[in-house]
Figure 1: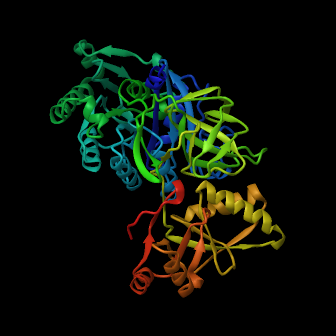
Figure 2 (figure 1 turned 120 degrees about the vertical axis):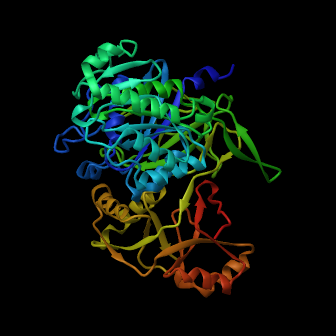
Figure 3 (figure 1 turned 90 degrees about the vertical axis):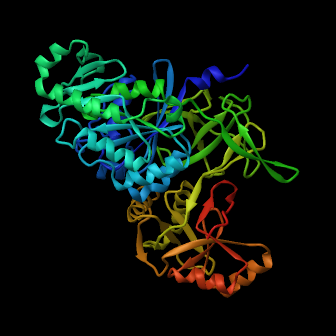
Length: 542
């Protein structure tokens, strides 16, 4: 028996956007429509006790932004939909990058007033590198926004691929009348209201043109004209081209008013791809060989793409998020972490329904499951039911900013070490321990990461720390062809050697020229701006 019938029912996608484009609101609405949550938390009323379901960390509640990616599962039209919300803020782009390695498609949310913004560009780039199919949702049509043709034009330019409109707006802002569905040839009439269900909206077939003209007058005529222009300029819809990442279907709507969201959900079921094969490396006679793992394969395999500490304030737990790549997970099965070859016996395995966690009895390729662990599992680890294989493709980027950690109460040293070790394994921040001793160094991609770590050390580990500037501005992981060469290099720069959370050796720089000078002195040392999580392999570029 193959698991193909189960894997075909799965859809795993990430929502990507610029901060404030309405991503978290849309996530809530998707959950609401699939019946996963009864009442969507309006993101607007931050003072309300009911925060957005997907934002659970204290600091997120304070700032109204998502900093950790969250995972949700829902059932819709007999399909299991795994949705991953990603932090839009650029300071957390690493987390987002890692999440995008665990999905088969992406839903891009664009604010209709602002078009494609900088943060979205970086995420698009990641999707394009991986040929991830993208569905586009143009949000906030009930506000004063740009012309839909202009938006399409910009999306095409930015994505570097043609847009195919699936729905089209009639009017905008105060005169937003609704959307025309090109697939069903009907117009759905817009009514504002946060609690409305999709089934409650009025639908009028386009064949009743006289009725539509009489009701919506010039708005309807203008929409039909611009729609004809758009469809005339865009290619015919090709499902193959979309799956290859060469075309994007575009939907218009207003997430906050539940409008136009159902169409997106249907598109995810009808158009988005089921779980895809993954490339893995197997050691044969000590030689790495590539093999393709099919989702319906018998053997269980999954990859840890995220580790999150303290999701539950009452239990100091850590959850490893695993994307199932093949086979079937069943409760109580024997698992093995490939990096260490140790057996893994998770104390509890859960699936996520927003804030609710539910024990999972079975999971198939495409599903995201959480293992409660007490150490022993890191980002990038491959977990199998015994077979030896290793998935790659989860990079760590060299940090661009550094701070020194100074503990206000020296008696809390142990808690600090524990806190930093866990936050380092989680990938929330990079932690470097200088070989010469002295204070620990934190490396980050953006300033906000430091603030979050400081806040979490205080609230979760009861460690009050002061973060001070330091002279370092960058780091490179280093490797050498022989141990002797590496030792000579370390002896030449003892002050600049540090080890990260995975004990990988790094060279700390104070200016961009440092690496160049060190390279000239020691031509046989390799400097790496990226490190692969899995098995700590380093890429050989500079």
